[in-house]
Every structure is written in structure tokens, then in C-alpha cells.
Image (cartoon, rainbow, N blue to C red):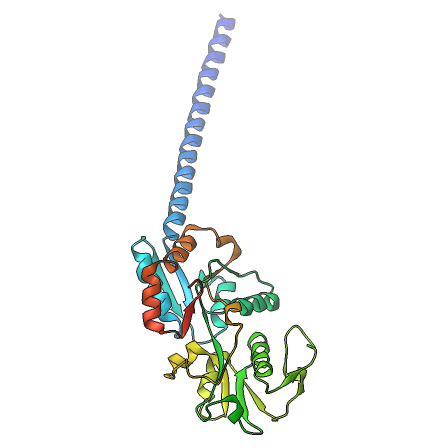
Length: 288
């Protein structure tokens, strides 16, 4: 009798244990379902987020970005345009993760920013456009007319100062010696027969000096935005195609779908027609 009672107790214990384990298993399955559902929602959100992204620019090239925004809408993308008031600010914002991309600075400028800030911002090919770089004046009609001790305003950042000094050299106004650093600077001027005075300015502000100095060296795009004819210049830099502008992103985003979609619209006939109609040659499409 005692033996039969012990067997009965043992069997009841097994049944209870089995019930507990089954219940635990069901709870685990429910938790797995909840976790998996959360993962699926996260993935779905990420996919949906790729349909909306931000591009940083400045007022001078915002119209080009607005054309891109318009054409992207038909592809189901929502492009948010963030307009900055400083040439370096979009790159800083992209570096810090405050925007997804930028369209503003030329390729050598981006490369210099990367070197100075230990970043790897990447300009995606194909590039979109370039702005020609030239000597402009509101007082004189040719380089030869520039007087002794002429004041010339140039950009003060390393990349564009280097380029400005090369333009002055090629125009016959100065002679450059060996570079003392990665870029030509004022210290590298070897001969200055007209004793031109070079005044450093912020890149996009150079055009504001045109009435106060004898000449400026700046981009055709900034001249147009300031109300001047960008095609009326004293001397043009012949290396402008080496300074392309395009979509700049973090390296991990080079091949994502929204980047591909934006690049695709910049290569369409519709984009090119609207771009050329607005800028009238102040910017030149890179692949045309």
C-alpha cells in the first residue's frame, strides 16, 4: 500500500513538473514572438526612414537642390533641404550626424576637410556640376589694367587660397616658389612685380568686396547670386573641371537606395534642362 502511494505521488509530481515546463515554454515562445515583432517593426521603420533624408546646402545652390527634391517626389522620396549660411557648416553638420548629406563644396575642399577633421566624407560619382573660378572687377576690363598696389580679395581657406594664387600666377601677376606646406600660401609668393595686396575673405563672402577693392577671385555662381554677370571676367581658371561638386555622404551610405535615387535624377534630361534654365551658365553640368 505504501509502495503504491509513493508511485502515485511520484507520478503526480511528474505531471506538475511537466505542466510547469510547458507553461514556461509557452511564455518563452510569446516573448520570442514579441521580440521578433519588435525587430520587424524596427526594420520596417528603417526602411521607411530611407524614404526621407536631409541635404545641406547654401542659398547660392539651393535652387539646384530644390529641383532634385521635386524630381525625387515622383520616386516616393521626401528630401528635406537644410540651408546653411556658412561654407563649412554643412560639412560640420554631416560629420556630426545632424544631416544625411550635402551638396555644396567642391571635391578638393572636401578632401581637405577630411584631412583636417579626421573624417572620410565621400563625394558620390557621377559628379553633378562645377563652377568656374575667375578674376572679376567692377573697375577694370582686363588684367593688364590692374594698377600698381592693386587690392585683390581672395578666399582665405587653404584649398581656395591655393587655387587663387595659381590663378594669379597663370595670369602673370605673381611668381610662386616652392610650397612650404600642402597648399600654396601667401608665404610662397616669390615675385610680385605689381605689389598686389591680397585680402583674405570667407569663400562665399569674397563677392561682397568687389566694390571696395580693385578685383576679386571667386566663383561664377557667387557672382550670379550677387547680381553680376558671371561671364564677364578678367581671367578664368582653366582647371575648373578638377573642382567638381556633387552629393557628399558618409562612406557607409554611398550605395544605399536613396543616394542612388538622387544621383539618378541629376542625370536626367529634365533635371539638366531646369538646371541650365535657372543658372544660365553660372554652374556647368559636369557630364555635359
